[in-house]
Amino acid sequence: MNEYCELESLDLTGQIINNASFFGSNLRNGNFNGVTAINANFCDTNLTNAKFVGADLTGANLSESYLNGADFTNANLTGADLSHSDLTGAIFTGAIMDGVVLHRALYTNEIAV
Image (cartoon, rainbow, N blue to C red; front, side):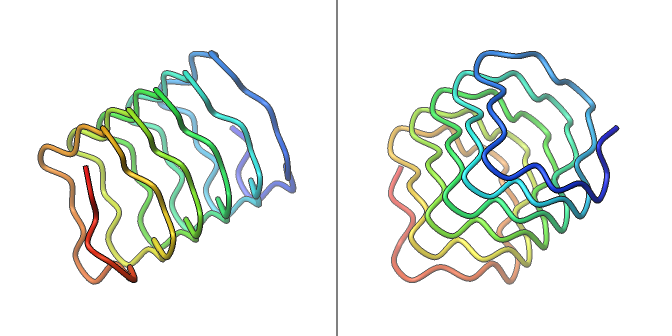
């Protein structure tokens, strides 16, 4: 579903997209607030400035992605893979990050949760 797509500014607010794959897509400035995306695949995706406020990303694959300025406020990232991703300026205030994989992720400051 939706692999290698140009979907800049896509708005999926509150949608259920469990197991969806956006591999290699451009989702820059996307709105995923309140989305349920359990085990979704966002690997190698441009999510610069995307909004995931209150989203459930349990087990999601966000590895090798551009997450610059993304907002994960109050999101559930339990077991998510953010390895090799650029998290520069990303916001994780109040996020649940149990078991998150951050191997070789790039970030400018400590990740505050």
